[in-house]
Image (cartoon, rainbow, N blue to C red):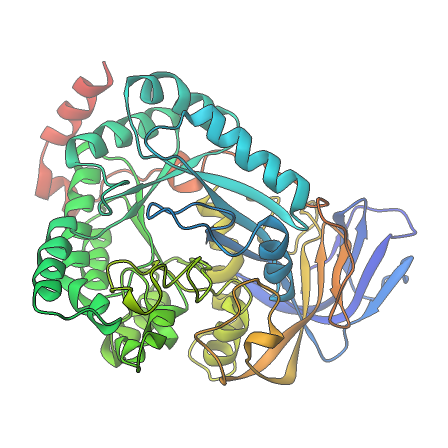
Length: 500
């Protein structure tokens, strides 16, 4: 039980009698909100101007989804189905109150123009708070010396780079350049880790033999492509001792590699997503092109890889749970650009999941006893806030934090359908799945965003959140004794030399 007081009545909003859970514990209390900020947490608060009785409900921090592709032109030249209005509305209905989406540079773009364009789109349309990661495709001298440091200083303190895709991939030398700049300026580097040449080599041979259907996408993206690239990415990070985060981890071997590297003190963090807990490779083996609805990279594996991801979440190897929402329509504008003639290499990679991310994990994780409610909060909110420089403003129900609060009805049962959801995709790979527990009231900075299954805010009412340096960058740990033994004094000599 927590008792805090920092207020004078009346409150703008009170949420009373709820079972409040943070990453560090659960208690029964009331929450008092003024000017969008939590100002008091105690029992028996006086009702506010808006008063919510949460008796029998769970009251949790608003979800943070730190991996979303919204209103983005992919490297394959395909535009996402969701813009910043439909994408953030869908997120809100699923209990998410903050997203970090991507501002994607293509190689001919200058970074300031990219940031300005995405900022305008989000400012005009978003209904919840948002930030950006920069996707960096052209780490030339201008970008590394001037543009990237300026972006980090502006509050975009993370960036993503790719080890695959023809129009996005960086070679190891370029990755080291990016890591060095990120280390100097305090940014987190996110890596899509797959071995490009492995995938390209297998895919060419499959196509030469006439294997074009969606199920061969998973065949071409062999799990070894992910595990090899992950091992290499960790080696690059260790070389110059700069933290990295491996995104959308899928495979058993990849989880093991990350776990062992972390045990040695390597500066590596990792994320996984709903598709790697709830989908399997065999889902793409459907008639015609229906299997394209399940194609993403890396592809889901089988039951063993699902169990490895669950174990990774449980023991902390995988610290954040994101949607990797990649919304492409199932038509010529998205998944199947050449209609019936589309091959697995031409299908847009990615699946939608921004609205179902939290309900799926709540139902299958919390309600079935695989994770605790505190672990749920850590994986869906608190760890994101710490990992990406949003804490202490976001990610916890505490005095001084934004009043991003979600009331959950644990008794509600919902059968998933595309018609239920609020994105612009038109299908969901989770069609027909029954979910227990659902976010029924959603508050962002004290504003009621969703209630009675209705949107209560206007487009453009979300705010850009400038982020501080991420915790893993600011609070870098000294090497463990095991790591010192493994690498010797060379680590210190190398760091000193490279810093000059």
